[in-house]
Image 1 (tube, helix red, strand yellow):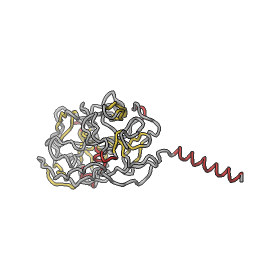
Image 2 (cartoon, one colour):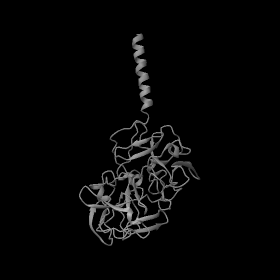
Image 3 (cartoon, one colour):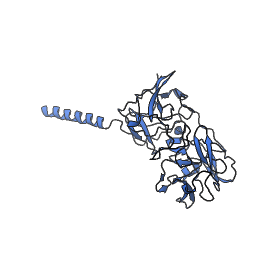
Image 4 (cartoon, one colour):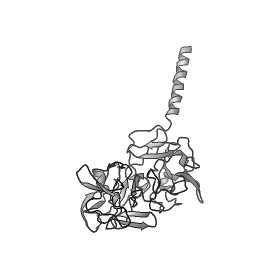
Length: 331
């Protein structure tokens, strides 16, 4: 009897230790795609852009699969232009005014693209041929890489450059921040800012980050009280259909176009945030997502300015959170 009691105790202790060491355990293969509580993005036709030819269907593995939007692929980027955007600072465009983007999963040292196949249909590579630097931009920053299909793609400061299929006219910048990995390019090859300033970042390619505000912090909203915001002051949300343990997300695919993930933020770059269960979620789609208390974090594409809370209560499943990760106003 004593032996049996000791065995049961040991099993219970081992289970407790396992639970502690696997807090925030990650559930693999969570690929359910839901665009919950948000109307699907309207299908857009191919835009007419000067100097462009050919079309490519949208849909991208690990990128944007929300619509069957089409894109014109420019024969040449021509002389690049610097667009002074009130919202994003200095943004690099081609000669027709079409925004150039960079992808965080690529590398600049050495220059390498990871966007191929269906991804390249949604994010067409910018051709290297005929591209020249904009006025005030160092021509030495421009380069090229040979893609797996043999075509030459423009690079800026080593970063491969892309268009976005849903940008159909000059000045469109609809791809900014998508999936927490796609960003408009600043003239120096860094990320364009979401608060202006032209992406003038520090070493380690931290361009475009707001100065003086933590990567995740809280603010006092007049209606909701304490809410978590990112470094740009944008409200952070959680999805009630996600799981804390084992940690998994039910927002994938097209859902992420409306609810981009919050990219990883270092613990020492937070203020007023619960650090227990503060970990990075390695999503099945390959995207890394920050969590608070094992809760995956998102922003809302419908929030256009710091302080917006348009995602609050959407579908009865999306809610702003406080510093402990608790949903505000959820029933």
